[in-house]
Image (cartoon, rainbow, N blue to C red; front, side, top):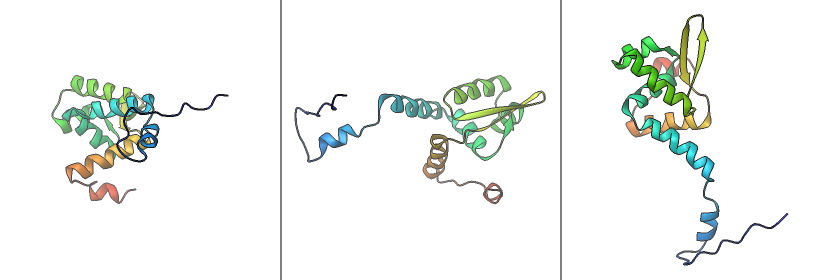
Length: 128
C-alpha cells in the first residue's frame, strides 16, 4: 500500500492551508449535496419538500396545498425523490410521500426553517 501523496500548493497563504484543502469533501459527496440543493432551488419543490418534512401526503393533497396541478406536482416529486430527499409508500391505490429520514434531508429541513425564520407548526412539534 502506497502512502498518500503530500499536498504541495504553489502558494502558501496561511498556516494549515494544505490541511484544509485535504479536508475538502470528496467529489461524490459534493455532487450529492449539490444535486439536493439544486432541487430545492426551485420554489415549488422547496414548498413541497417543507410540507413533506411535516407530514405524509398524497399527490392530490399536495396539489391542493400548493395550488398546482397533479401532473406538475408529480413532476416535482420525481425530481425530489431522485435527489433522495423524499420517499414514497403505496397503500392500496394511493401513493403517499414524505421527507426521507436521512441526515441530508433533515439538515436541509432545519436550514430552510432557519433561513426563512419559520418553525415547525406547534401541532406537529407536539406529535414528535
